[in-house]
Image (cartoon, rainbow, N blue to C red; front, side, top):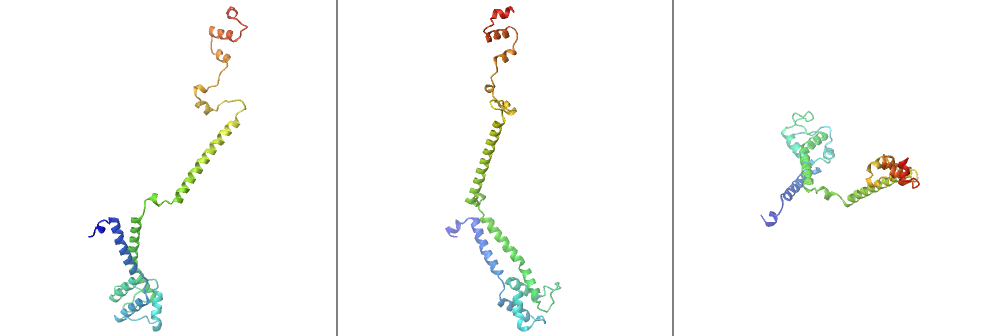
Amino acid sequence: MTHSEMMISPAEARLSTLGREITALTERLASVSEAAVLRSLDAMQTAGMTMPPTIEPRKIVAVYHYALSGVPAFGLSAATQKLIRGDYAANPNVLLGTIPKPPVLAALAKAEAQNLRADLARKREMVVALTQRPADDRRSAASRSRVRLLLQSFRQAHAAAKVGRDRACLGGCPEGVGAPTESGAADMRPGDTAPQKPAARGAFRDGPAAGAELADFNPSVSRETFHAA
């Protein structure tokens, strides 16, 4: 084993093996040629099987090649071998000793190639799984740009809606009155409370303290006069 072969990772080695297997399967599943059709009919005739009597001898190859167009060569080869061995004895569409009619032979050949097609599809899926990049790498620059634009648009719409709500609140309040809403009052800090009039504050006091404040508030009433009264 060379140094370069030792440096190959298991994933790379598996991909190389899958590539060779896919190539071989693709070749076996290639469409049948006119020469392959002629070889199949000749092999069955050599085994003693007879042609369908309803087909003109000079048109036999052309008719069978048309019916088998697109059918894998592997499928036709496998079906021919089974027909010669009598493996389709349980198939009601196959008459032993007689070459099947073109549509029947095409159906048999397709069925024989079905497993090969499924195997090829599985191997191709394995190649895709081994060569997939992480999700972040698969995102194109255009995709990331669209996401950024969507996020920016959302933020702008959110800011515009907030400004609209603030203006609606300011426009709905009477001019010169700064009474907060119920939610605003709950959020108001102690230093933000509206100033109260001195008389209103004195109304909650009693006794001499209240009288003293009233006397101070009205200079025309002396303390002695207020207390004498």
